[in-house]
Image 1: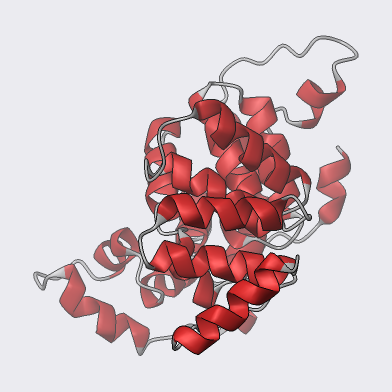
Image 2: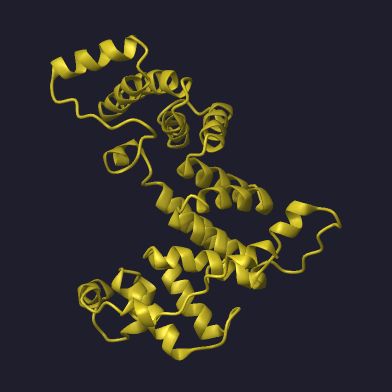
Length: 280
């Protein structure tokens, strides 16, 4: 399993890819992402945006982002965000995060908080990472949980990692502190969320399941289950899993294609599903 600092670095590296350039492969809230192929299309989009169409405003912001005109992108994203488009609010926060606009932590926080509170899972993960960096683990877990409950595999994995009891040290939650008790260390909860992410083919979660079965973290040691999850993670390109599953002298990137051809039968893989553990 990863240490907290290593986990943060891994998560931040993944989130660096969550910029406006990924929008064509991602949801933009209630708006479809439109292709602006020529000046006529741009003019039509601008006309709709000036007329108050929130989706046109969002898409015009996206178009300006692609043109590297970040101040104009922020202008139109802000108009869409003020009409309730959570993805637009998130994109403004990312512009500040990536130093594409003049550094303004207050503005970044404002837009990020808005997007998270409006239910955007990407914003909830980003906000959780902010709380991890600030060493506020309980607040981080709250926001990871919001995204995890929406089915976001990355959030499920990151939430599971926070629950592992052997990484939490001695906990002494004050009596009546509901939040502290809710998010106290629990291998059962860690396994539940990790399992959900693993079943969505999230490679890091699959590798974590193999480690859990190897070390007996919250479940009986099982070499067979360890190997099944290890192979599944390797088949999905997890570098450490590939190295562990096939310790040959070949470079890991050469072995990736071999593992992609060796899918494991999911029907024999065991994974904890009891949601009752969340009530504990």
